Length: 565
Image (cartoon, rainbow, N blue to C red; front, side, top):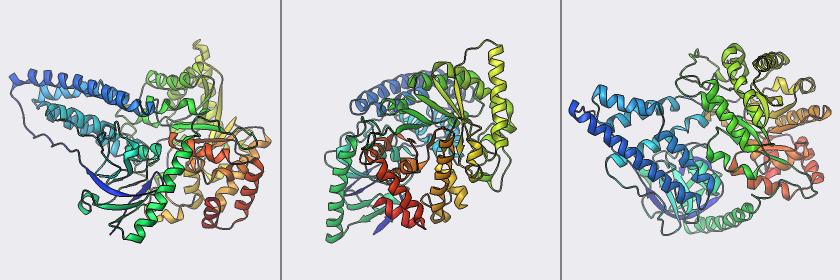
C-alpha cells in the first residue's frame, strides 16, 4: 500500500513505525456555582505557574542540543502570560460561571480560529503554538503527564496526527528516521523540525493513523511525498541504500553551518535570513548569517486589533539591535487579498492574489502605513535598516510610497525623534516591474526577488491551488530570464539584488543564481548549511557556465534535471 502526502525536509528512510498520539478530552459545556469561582481561579493561576515551570524544563532540555529550538518555549511562555488571554479566561469563570478548563478551551479556540482563517500558511501555522499551550494547560488541569518523544529506544519512523513543539522537546534526532503526519503544511512545526534536523518527512497524509500499525515497516520518500507500507525485499533494499547515502550527506552538510558563504575562488556570497517575527527561536541563528534578507511583519497584524506604533517599534528594534551593523530588510505590511485580518474589513475579491494587497493596501490605508513607517524609522536608530515595499507593479507605486516615507521622516525630525540612516527597496514579484528594472533601479536603493509570487504571476498559476501545481514552475525558462534582466539592470546602477523566495534556498538552483550575478541569497534557517555547501563547491566561472546553459534550455523540466544533475 502506498500513502501520499506533501514532502518536507528531504531524503528517504526505511524502518518501523512508531505511532504517537497525545490527545486531551474537550471539556464539558458545564457551569459552576458562584461559590466555586474563586477555587477555579486559584486553580487556573496554579496551573499557569506549573506550565511556566514545565516550559522552562523543556527549554533547558532542548537547548542543550540546539539553542534555537530551546527558544521556542520562550514564545510559549509569552502565550501563557498573554494579557488578553488572562483577562478573558478569568472573566468567563467569574461572569459566566464557566469551569476553568472550559474557559481555557474556548478562549484559546477563539484565537486559534482567527489564525486558521488566514490563507497565509506562515501565519496559520502559528495556531500550533497556541494549541500546544492550550493542551499543556488542560493536561495540567487534569493532572496528566506528557509522554513526549524524548524517550525513544531505537530508530523509528514517527507517525502522528500532528506534532507540536512540546511533543518534540528533547527529541533525539538520531532516533528519528522520518516523520509522518495527518495534518500540517510545509511551514508547520513538524516541517520546521524535519528541515532543521534534516529528517525526511511526509505531511498531510489523509487517514494516516487508520492505515498504519505500531511496528509496521515503511519506506519513506520525502521528495515524492510517498510512504510505501510493508515494502517487498527489492524495494526495501533500494530504500536502505538511499537512506544510508542520505544520512552521510546530511552529516557532511552540517559541517558548513558555521562557515562563511564563499566560493572556491574566494567570492563572498551574503547569506540572509528570512524571519516571520522577532521571536527568539528565529534570532538565535543570527550568528550563522550576514543579514536579515526578509523580515515579514504581517504576524504583528494578525490579531483582532491593529498593533500600536509602540508594539511595532519594540519588535523592529529587537531585531535591529540583535543584528547590529548587519542589514535588516523589513518588508512593509503585506496583507490583503489572500491574507485576511479581523480588523481590516476586506471586501470579497474574486481574484485575491490580483487584488488589494501589499503596497496597494498600504497606499489605500495611509494612516496604517504611516504608523508602520514611523515605528520602523524610529527603530532604524538602533541598527541598519532597509525598508522593502511588496507587490510593487509600477514607478507610480514606488514614488507614492517614497513620498509617504519622506513625509513621516520629516515629521519625526520636526518632533526631534532620533532616527538612523535607512535604504528603500522593492520586492520584484510582479513581472511588470521586472520588465522595467532599468528604470526601477534608478528609483530605489536595492531589490529583492520574491521568486514565489514572481513565479505565480509569471506562470498564471495560483501557488496555493493544488489543481494547477504542475503549471507553477519555479524552473520555468522565463523565470531565469527575468532574474537575469533584473540583476543586470541593478548592476549597471551599482545597486544590489537579492532573492528571498524558495528558489534562493534551493541548493540545486544556487549555482545558476550566482552565475546570473546574484551575490545575496536569503532563506529560512534550515537552508543555511545546504546552501553554504553548494556555494563552497563552486567557482564563479563554473557558475556562469551553468547559468548560460540554463538560459539556453527550453523547458522547466530540462532545467530542473540539468541543475540537479
